[in-house]
Length: 316
Image (cartoon, rainbow, N blue to C red; front, side):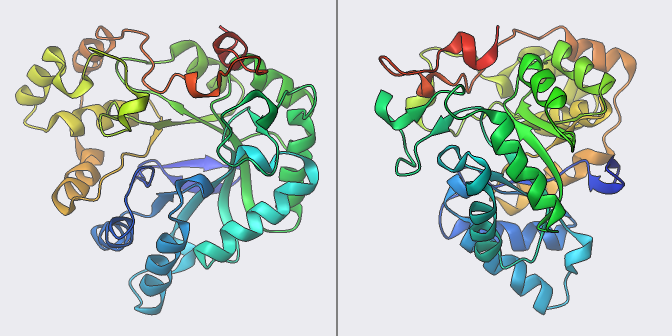
């Protein structure tokens, strides 16, 4: 498995995503994935399933299937725990749930701050603006987590180029990675180029278009990535599944990718995408389907009289 080097640590380029994995399913999926050969698991406190992931990890360690050192585990700081003093307690809760002593990578989940009492913020008084709760302050807590040995690396998720520039300018430990929505319909070339030129890796979430996300997060008549005609034809020609073709496209770009599945057959197929070969012509075919189309557009952070807008969230 190809790896990416983050501050001297090697992260497998292909991992298992756990967003939207239902209770009872994520435990089995993690155990099955590790048996298949996955060595990279992507988690987050807000997914509500870290205890179940932790149970699966502990059993895999106890059964001798894998050692802790062989795994790369990522988690994320939720919005209501922004602020220098909140980061360590949040991380310690995640470590307790995952039954781990340290993470390999800890990310700020969103450049969105909420008051501590409001995990699921939905009204303006639930939020804090980034002027009231600056990212720089939260990042100091992230840096302390590295210094305390609670995580090897730190990074961010859903950050624009502007926010990355601001963070890099106000940090002692630079972010090693930006996890963002990225797929053939939303290729993010400008962001990828900026990150590459600044030694920040990119990780793709919702790489297959996230068609199983909640209905409330879907737009009417949105394009379905897995049904794209050009990608389907290409997949048929190279004798791969559509999902494998898309995952391989990310890997060929040097982008880490974390497809989610709880189906044993698809877990195996997704893992085998690391061996799918794409030619320059194949890559160009996929490049041409770009629609600059977000599926997870962040509209859920926009509330009447609130501090966040689509414009200031993405700086576009």
